[in-house]
Length: 264
Image (tube, rainbow, N blue to C red; front, top):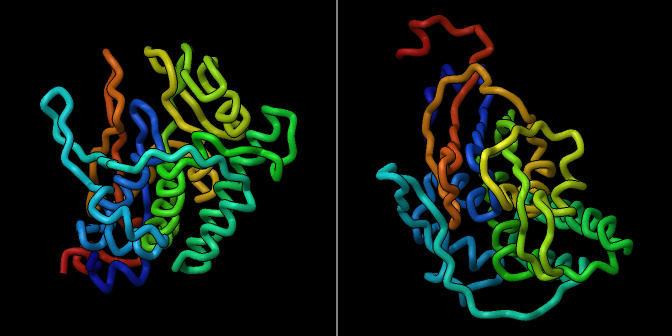
């Protein structure tokens, strides 16, 4: 990612997500990876950094299409796992990984936020919480890779559109849950939302905890010059609504450059 030096000196780096039909952890990984220009080899190297070399080649950025509109997604071929982890286990896992201090802290803070939400829902302490779905390998990947990529991009401003919510039923390890899931409902405090004419889960606890940990500002598009963008799809498509999430990366000028400076 090469920026014009005159523009870069007096501009802020901006990351924008417009979650049209919702957001999940794998969508965050995909969108951030596309904005960072990650290759297959780059992704495999990140898996090695996370002490997961056995997953190289089994986590792939792929092209997806919905209603003839091309986008991107994350294809996972993970070994089946039944391990239930506590917060201490997750902390130990990431402390052993080859991550920058900031990427590690973002990852652990995201899990701490999730533990707090699950503890509230189940009447436990965060240390007592058993991470079932959230502690599974795919969530470890989503949290770790998203944090590494966010640290790599290092935006000065992160803006996310209102999160779409709807009613319905969610199938979870604890049985049938109302939408939004109780942990998501707990984490929604201070978050701007909008209604969606659909049913079921649109925002996962993993994605919401990452958004809050990354300091997302929930609002409209900021004034910016877009450099690159990517349309990202999850594994679930909703009928009769615009699907996918748009990720955009660009610069916001502080107004000091002239038009001539910007076009050189």
